[in-house]
Length: 114
Image 1 (cartoon, one colour):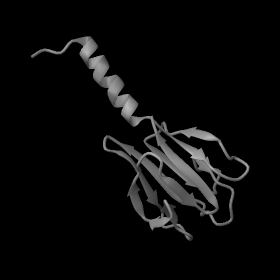
Image 2 (tube, one colour):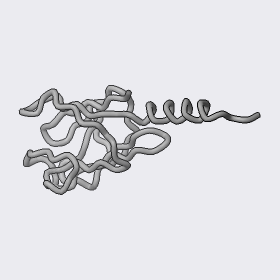
Image 3 (cartoon, one colour):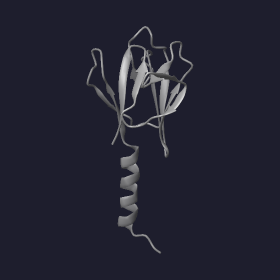
């Protein structure tokens, strides 16, 4: 069986759609801010060197990262001082699902697919 260019483009569009995701800040002065996850690894922390800078004394300089893979998105806590939560439960690494609420310091951030 042969595949056409249109079949390949269709598969690529589906693959890209699966990988689209964003974070939505749910509280604080940035409430409602939407951040597209477009990088392979997105870092979160208090440092201005992070991709997403969270200005809160409870947030470590390099607190967590979100890694994009073919299997989805993984949140990894980077041995932060105060930890990270998903839906209120402390986690060290966690495969994110649509609607998960990430807790980092005082920030609450919703993960959204598509």
